[in-house]
Amino acid sequence: MKNISKIVVASHNEGKVREIRDLLAPFGIETVSAGELGLAEPDETETTFAGNAELKARAAANASGLPALSDDSGLAVDALNGDPGIYAARWAEKPSCEGGGRDFDMAMWHVNDGIGENPDRRARFICALCLAYPNGEAYTYEGKVEGDIIWPPRGDKGFGYDPIFRAIGDSKTFAEIDPAEKHAKSHRADAFAKFLKDQFPDG
Image (cartoon, rainbow, N blue to C red; front, side, top):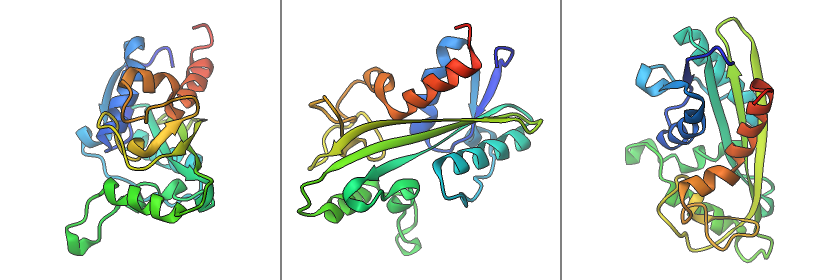
């Protein structure tokens, strides 16, 4: 990893790309997103975060000829038996009759409605990062952050389900805190710390 000067962030999600770029910036690694390269988004056919992360990273590495780092993440809510889980983004997909695209305001309503009067609002964000090389090597790292679901949504600094997720010990949601503070404690930061420890063992 130390010899890598450029890496593909295997995502078309601008929020994820921005966070991963911020996390890689201190290491002087140039990043380009799959969207910027015009790479196709592979179908996420795996049943785990790790499986989907590896699928996306391998696809980007093979298509670009560059090392690729992919993130697959989602929100798991205890009262919903772990849903939306790996389908977190798909819960936000609008019907084709409405023009398609993703509506996370709608997805957050679905989460809150699903919890209903259940007093158990525990939840966690889970992230799997996979680094894949064009030669077929791949390394996967998983992280998470525990918290609970709050309602109504609060804040405009995050993306996805951030406005309804409050980490344990916090009074603000992920969408209310400064991005740098979120980067220090998020599920992505947890997975990234494991990635760095493995790929940069000497610091």
